[in-house]
Amino acid sequence: GKKKYKMIIGQFQPMTEENKKVIENEINDGHNVLLCITDCEPTENYPLNADEVEAELKKVFWKHLSDEKIKIIVIPEIE
Image (cartoon, rainbow, N blue to C red; front, side):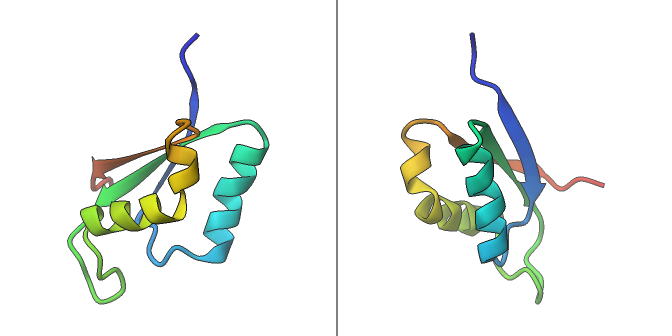
């Protein structure tokens, strides 16, 4: 069947070691992970736009992208 994914929604900035560990643990437990970056206007606390965050996440999780253990998408800002 089709792969299923655990969905994690966030701005992912800064990408802390704790955040990385949570995502890596999901993968190590056999789950696939869908990272949903909320497309928010950059602010003082969150200076990166969604495309920049996506580029950073791809650098961090590059080894999981080719085997589709992780997928990264940008979603509209949610309430």
